Image (cartoon, rainbow, N blue to C red; front, top):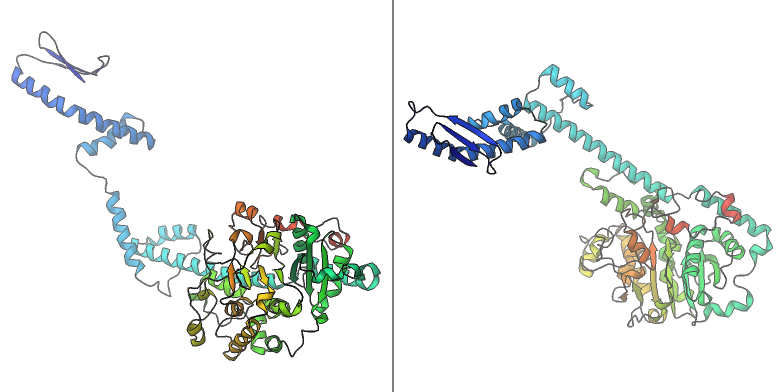
Length: 533
């Protein structure tokens, strides 16, 4: 900014720095203004004008943001600032905050009639002319009602999801029936598995022996197919598939009609193991026949639950623990592996809701350091929900037997993909300890833990577990829909533990393809039963 005085001192021009634009021109009458007054005026203008320029620029910028472009608008915005007036909207907001805090500490009256929609709220405000506190109280009541309804809906959704997870899909039921019928009518479906000349391989420890216990034929087919497809040495694979009596014929038919050459598959029913007698497994028979247990797993899962003090995540975990499969002998079979396979030294036990994506033959080279069970620990990892399990997540530490024998912060481990050293196992009392703790929990009316196969195993295998690298076994695909896809693709075994099994409609659509790609949709039985359509 520059000042120019005319030679006659009759005019003063204030121009921009570059001199191209005259901002102000003042004509001076000599007889009215002295040079001293003129000089002081110039000093005052030189001092004030930069501030006026900056303030005008700020208001102009604000005006451009708020669609204010006319000189009239700028004047209305600039005038109050020059006159020292302050916008009182901030005070209004602060006063409303005080009212909200006051209402937050008060309970909503039971007789307060709440609008059901926002438009109804606006209409009532106009007609009844609510004050700020009345409006805040109505708003609080509407939000509390919405939260309550949302919470009830969430618990209803979780309960329905639990029953959906426990049901057998129509297609899978159809597959079992058709294959069972095929077993009775087709001699090829009844052929011996494996063929007689391969029977010695079933106890040959130079092979890689996998054990799978399931009554789900489709799931078993995916586990076996994915393992063979991912293996660098499929000719070294031997699968021992164990199922119940009602599913045996259908399971046998499937693998007889759909061989996975060069791998070898043996199918056996629990009724075909001479060792599995009532004398050897009395506790499990008691578990299956106990009225309280059957009512716990098949009864009303909401009755008696204090939903007001339970989070949806906790409720979902409790429902998952009440799956009827946990009182099935098939789920407890792994505790009898040394007796069921007396000639084997090392096996990998797989759950039926896993998919193998990488060659697992290196597992047989893992040194367990004299331990029995090679498993992935579940107390540390990137996923804080899935990999945050410690003993306190499974047991009731207010029970003296639990608090006196276990450490609540001790890391838990996972079933689903485990390496078992059967030679080391046979030197322990793991099975007896498992039975003992099952009996104690029955005596305590299930107050030590809610039944499942993992809690008693966490006690029985205490001191016998060797942690293996987490990349071998990735968990949570059955309940964590935000599972990292890159991590899935890198994992050797992915596990759909949880309710959202990939063969169910409630399974997560973006995680299902990792499982369905191992289904042979051209198979006549799969096609005729409309599997996964």
